[in-house]
Image (cartoon, rainbow, N blue to C red; front, side, top):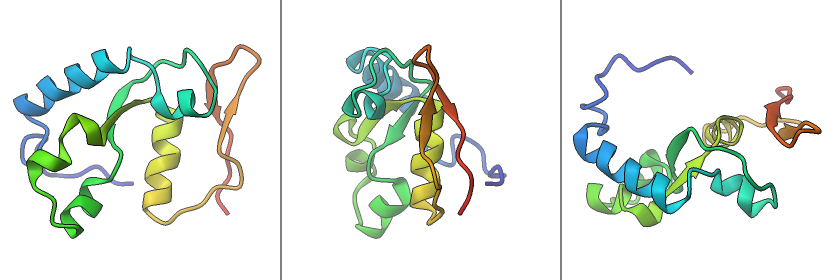
Length: 112
């Protein structure tokens, strides 16, 4: 995916986003919620993700406040975020997130 040429603020990630991101990371204990739901514990999140994507929220005509409400946000690790984003874009993987013997995620999927 190509990087957007728009500024972070124009895409809705300004000071208000920084505040809600902090709240969500604290609420989720800095742990990937996708991994937790799959029974993988202790995987550190690097980002806060919209559960219902911003594009889908726009199509559903959700308000910005509803889109960025903490109930629509979750802490997520990089491998889970990549898989989720690709799925939202209609891409598929033969394998999802692989986990090493140390319990840390690693992406070892191939495009199908």
